[in-house]
Amino acid sequence: MITVLAGGTGSVKLVRGLASVSKEITAVCNVGDNIWLYGLYVCPDIDTITYGLAGLLDQKRGWGIRGDTFSFIRQMEAMGQPAWFALGDRDLATHVYRTEMLRRKKSLTEITGAITEMLGVGQKILPATDDEVETVISTPKGAMHLQEFWVKNGARPAVTGVTFRGADSARPTRQVVDAIRNSEKIIMAPANPVSSIGPMLAIPGVRRELERAREKVIAVSPIIGGGPVSGPAAKYMNALGLEVSPAGVARYYKDVAGSLVIARTDSKMAGRIELLGMKVETTDIMMKGRRGEARLAMYLAGMARN
Ligand code: FO1
Image 1 (cartoon, rainbow, N blue to C red):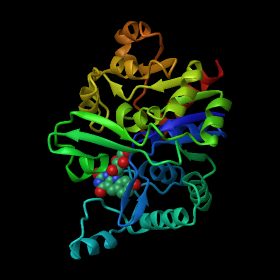
Image 2 (image 1 turned 30 degrees about the horizontal axis):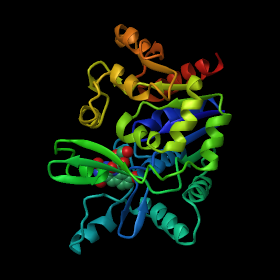
Image 3 (image 1 turned 120 degrees about the vertical axis):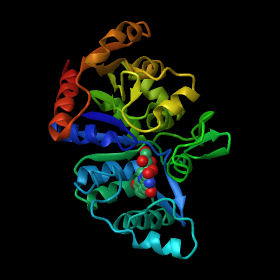
């Protein structure tokens, strides 16, 4: 069994690649991006992985359902309601179902299991916790929810800090603890370390389990050379005083991951990363197309057998 820690829109490629080469994949998903909108509980990272594995994901946007329409959100706008988060009409069914099940006292883990089953996903998708954790971005304009910073404000404000509200008292679920303990390897997807993986590492019980499992935890760098692959990783990493490079990623992950996989072109950084006590592997981490996804997955699964 391989467990993959996933968050953001970039992780889905590796999760899909792993699902194509291994039968037993568990994706543990970030919940820091989750947001209540119009009384609905929206879980973007869980949904991106779910839609990706169900073959429903809009590949171009990287989120939501392919071919979806946006009549609901347009009508909200026409009614003078805030409409900066584009919930698609079909996507809406997921949020309505999830929220109704929460009202019936089902846990997010149970609900996610039910949704994956309804959509024919064979892999296990687990929220990192059933408790609410919210990624908060501090800016000169004030502190705001990650989605408000990223979507409503287009990631334009300067970032002075990143915190994870609720993480201190959040607990990993039994399923997440078991997945970490029972997996042959745990792979940290090439995702924004601070906003996509960070909220999971901020949950003390998740961090403790990963620290214990450190030798079998392999992180894949989301950064090649000096620039992030996508998203505002640089802003978040700068705010935390981290160098925006694979070495900066290594510093963030050093206590929870025993190995870091970096791009071949970054092999000159290996020495600095090894000084942090991590093993370094170099390969092509770009994942171009389905073949690229499967290739990196196969490489990581191969490492998993070593
Ligand atoms: N990202 C956007 O940039 N604009 C949107 O309007 C938007 C809507 C949206 C709706 C559902 C969903 O699951 C994701 C959505 N995303 C949108 C993506 C999301 O903001 C982030 O990319 C993830 O939270 C990053 O982890």
